[in-house]
Each structure stands twice: as structure tokens, then as C-alpha cells.
Image (cartoon, rainbow, N blue to C red; front, side, top):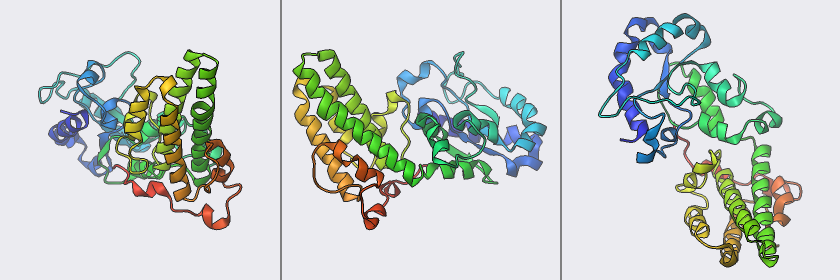
Length: 311
């Protein structure tokens, strides 16, 4: 059973008894499973179960409620059955921190955002590591009668402000150009094979970042970066293209790199980020940032609206 499904079934089995002593708070309590762990992204498999995997879910309380019932509710949660539906008890690793149990809403989001409130300025957004934003909106909310937890989650799922989104796209495009179109062939010309491998890997990483930015999705931790592109609507075939590229030696990869860059460029043109022209992606960075585009091009359709955000 996938971890998120296990969490939901465990929650449904335990929640009524767990919250019975807190009937007056029942409509103020949010539950679900969000946060660190491959199961929250839906990426867990048989190899994921060696640590921090097993029955469990999160309970989120407003700060004032957590101060009153939080410790007692956590004690009740700790008494829940450790095994469920054939799954062994969770085995937490020393550095995993608390992943399930009772949290205050402010403390939970502070863990990922660095503050209990939503970022306001572009600088606020940019100082938050993107993988933490991805972690803050993964998983699922099972119940949230008041909507306090889900309000913050929904705002974060709306992705970056327009100026930051363009910057993310521009950075990815510039890195694709420098790593794949320039430094990869240059390294091969110099006979620097290790540098060529590094350039190819950087190109793959940057292309994955572009796919995420165009689809309005935060990039997760690097080991999930390629996998998370698999079902995105824009540049949908990049997952397969990058997989083939990763199995190709740098010496034979240049044509594949250029095809990927051309497809990325056509998508950028399609959504009004730039104009047809130079095949070298870095030449389009200023256009993407909005410095050289006419007014109508700057209000192009937002491609990330094409993807429904998870609840």
C-alpha cells in the first residue's frame, strides 16, 4: 500500500476515538499528511520503507488550541496502535524530526517557510529554499473544517508571484544554455570528460527546473527532481527525453541537447515569454524577464493554470 493511502486509512480508523475527548474542538482540528518523506509526494516504493515509513498522520491546531490541548492530544496520539493493515510500526531516524503527530499550524509552516506567515516580497519568496516550498504543499489534507491550515496551503499552491516566476524561468533557461549548449561541447573539445559529465548533469537539472517553473510547481529535493516531471502537462515528453539523455555518453549527447533546447524555446515562444530567433537560449533571458517584450506579450496566458493543484 502506498504511504498516503496507508495514512488515510489509519486516520479514518483512529480519528474518532482519538478526538472523542475533544468534542468541543473537533470542528477546529485539521488532519492530513504533508511534509518530508517520499510518501507525501507519492514517490514511495518498496525501497522507501526502511526508515520513516508506517502508519501515521498529522494533526494541525491553531496556536491557541495547541496551547490548551496540544500536549494531551499528542499523548493520545502516541497511544494509537503502532501497526496497521499489515504495516510495521514507523521507525524514525535520529535526524528526521517529527513528521507525524500534533503540530501547531504556525510551527508547522515555520519549519518550511522560516516564518509563520506567508512570504510577501520577492525577497521573502527567494530566500526560502524551493524544495521546502514543495514539501509544504505536498501530500493531502483529510479534514480542515475551519480552513486555517488549508488557507496557507492554497496560497502557497498558487506558486510564485509573476516577477519571481519569470526569474525562475530565466535562471533555468540561462543554465541550460551555459551547461548544455556551451560548456558541454567546450569540455569535450578540451578532452575534459569529467567536466562534460558535470555539464550534462547540470543541463538535466536545469531542464527539470524549467519544466517545473512553466507548470507552476516547486522543485522538490534533487533525487525526486526528474521523477516529478513525469506527469506535467507542459513539456510532457521531457521526462522521457531526459531519461534517454542520462543514458547517453556526453560525446554522443549534443544533438539530444539541442532538440531539448529547441522544444523548450518553442514552448517559451508559444506562451509569450520571448520571440523566435537565436537558438542559443541565453539570448532570450532578457525577454523572459520582461525587459524587451511589448505590453501584450507580458500578459501571456499563465501555463501553470493548466495543472490542477493537489488538495
